Length: 171
Image (tube, rainbow, N blue to C red):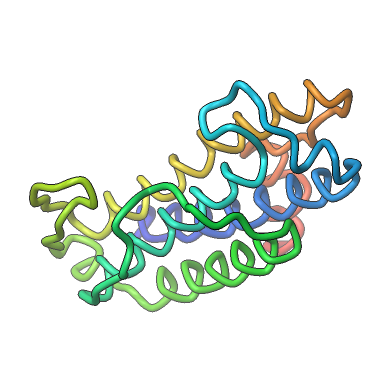
């Protein structure tokens, strides 16, 4: 039961952390948001595109549906508003999805194909942990790009979420 509780907390935390960093990115001048950088995905918007694509790919795997992606990178870059909407929407989906699962379902194996070829198998809980971890990893990239732009990233560590959000919800 504790594992289900923790995976649900992590889904909520991930959406919260994404929202906080997106708010801070929204304070940047457009030239900083669209700037090509020497970064993992060449800039802020391509990093957000990648995060959204990966969330959608794994959503498809979890649902057993074709996600339609052939790459982890997007050839079309959208606006910050579009990515904010998409990442908030998928964050809500993951929260709802995790809240719908029981322990047996979390342990079910999911078969999938990697975008770059080959097949894989993971249980639902490991996929969900990967999603949280993946987003944390790329929020680190985004934080670095904020520093490069002269802005301080928000404090988005899990203990901050516990202090500012989770503990207040569970009083």
